Image (cartoon, rainbow, N blue to C red; front, side, top):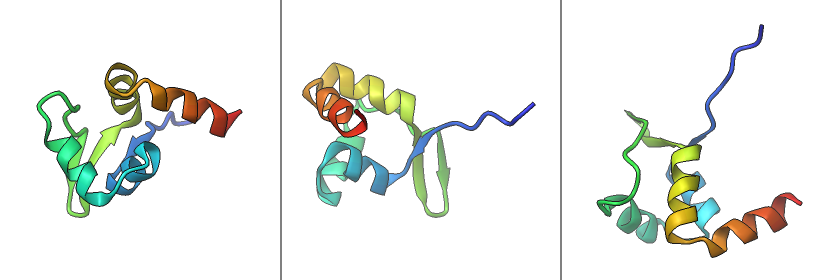
Length: 72
């Protein structure tokens, strides 16, 4: 039986997924409604992709359509 891996986002993945600058990522992750990091590592915080995608669905739903276009 294979190991099930969690999909994770670091700061760079957040920038790419949200299409924003590093500064904007820092602003977003400081918001009280942004998901808490899954873990904090020496290289920075990481988030569960599922948590971030739920946040996007609630706060920036137009970005869900962009994602579907990229994957479709």
